Image (spheres, rainbow, N blue to C red):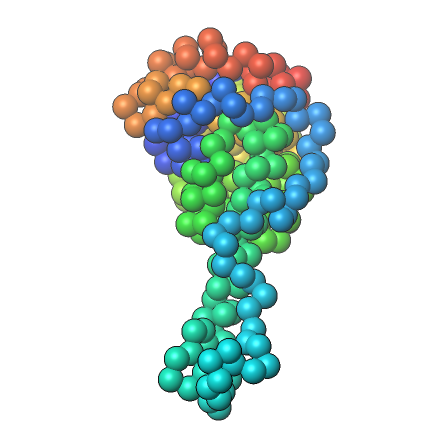
Length: 242
């Protein structure tokens, strides 16, 4: 068994913020992903506080008139374009907050704040979430692997095979044991059955979360593997079973 999270560009580590996740890892759920679908409270996961409803009152508070573009003469607080941008930003904040919260609940060792930050700047993960929603943890985990594939594997490692989590993690462990380059793990990842995306994400992110030094930028494959085998037994067990 192994974990690919030690590789420097791995999206799982980016979302988990390896520099800060260790201190918070004990607060994350390590529950079995037997139920991969959760319902999150979108209101509770709201973000920056900017309203997505917007709009002007029928009569400006300061008594000024509307100009032809629909704003206030002289002191417009927001243009229609600004309101659209604010609504879009608010929607992205809400999606990222909901997705990160759900993935943590499903057992992925992420830290909410750093996960949301990584999500908001992602080029694949966030657009994918906008399509699949934020209630199916396996679908969201596949989005994370799609981002990882784009960031680390030149887009060629999206899980699309038939292998189990156990088989792919064993392949990753073989890569780790010889300190192989990221391309080795990419060849493992692409063989994963997409239905097992959450299982592998739980397995691999544990290494990044609980072994930030061994599996981080200054670590290496063998030391990451040793730490993972010691600290990620629960996450490893759910992968072996799937």
